[in-house]
Image (cartoon, rainbow, N blue to C red; front, side):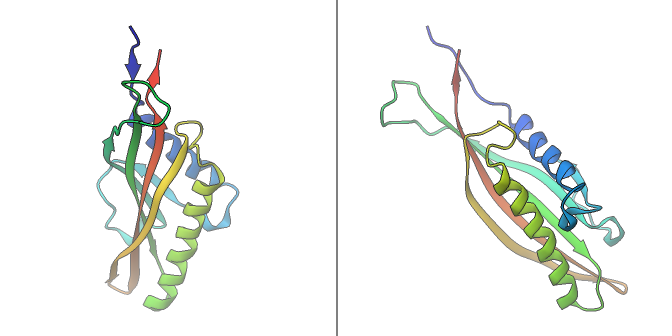
Length: 155
């Protein structure tokens, strides 16, 4: 009897966390960024630049072409909340946020296996969500949604 084991979603998210930490040492767009996993969403402009990682759902659609009974994909969906604060205007803050988003997307595209945790990335979308001013500080947020796809392992 074949036994299947789903991939651990925490392994996927923690691989992404490690990718951003490593990239912050070499990519100026991610310099000084704080990266958290499943923590309360940041509300403090002084904690920016800030990245939060949150799993949202996992689906297991069946594989039908060339696969036997029981073969499944595992689609792990998660969001990356990216926050930036600074500048003398919303426009300047927006430019800083976009530089940070560019660094996040570039990091993901440079290792689409997420350190070997998946086969590929699908459905990458960025939503610009939250524009605020806290006292004299502008703070903006983007939410990047991503789906990491792999096959459920048999052993």
